Picture 1 (cartoon, rainbow, N blue to C red):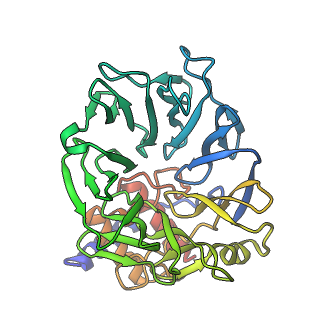
Picture 2 (tube, rainbow, N blue to C red; picture 1 turned 30 degrees about the vertical axis):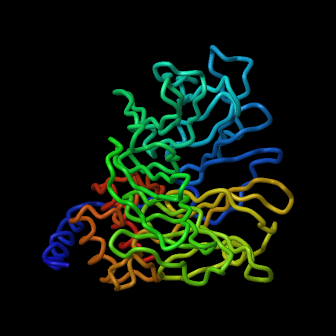
Length: 400
């Protein structure tokens, strides 16, 4: 950490000159919030306060404050069923498709605006599906058919970019990072690739055996999935590594934006079967054990999980009673960001190690310093700004 102590001294001087008001943040306590039954929920917002999915033949958005809201169908297709697949980090933009079969039109819904179809490709046959939206809600990765065949398209307000057919034939989009600069794909032959927003190849992930990817971190440097039926991560510069504590029958399903937390599931029989969360500091812990510790009881058993919020605190799950819930862990102390190792593992203590690590990340623009978007709720926004600095100083001053 070159020059870190100079930056440490500078920050201390700044903090003395800034009056830091106490911040009371909503949702700091652990919670288990029911959403409903008979739902197919597909995605969760960055802070766990909104989800999207399908109820019967209708798409919906659920928010913690407003409950279930049915989304309007595409105006030209009022009689065609609707399916929602992905939601932006702030919960205000959702993408999906009009149906599971043709005519199938990809669409975008925006809060206060409504539902709009995404553009058909030249020679298209009304066969499009949108399953991935960027975290900022400004890019949508979808597939559509033109006169050549099924194409992968990255759409933004400024236009569409189509994956070249000769290089992208057979590649299925899997995930999209915050602003659409990193795209994760997998081919029918099992080739896993990371591309940029112009579909230029950034990395080819060569596995010793079949690797199925499920998600990527906001930077695009870490991919989670399963390799030979074992929960496995691929990290740029490190390669493949198994999630410590996972069983031979397991998968890694999702990763937080900063790469700190991984959500996965063991499928082995017995006490080690079920969903888990892994982080470098605490290792692998079964989700039910975390819920018992955080809530003081286990209101429902958890046979299945559906997603992890970008801040790593909230898990979308389906209980043994078939009710969907959002479980949120208590907010970590804003001043506890490192355990002295410089890797971002929290240790439930606030020391000089935390401020040294945070200031180094702040100076470097490292996303581990992305603690808050200015709302005071601990919701990341893929930017390292004064908002993060003030959020951190509040926690550091409180010594929580």
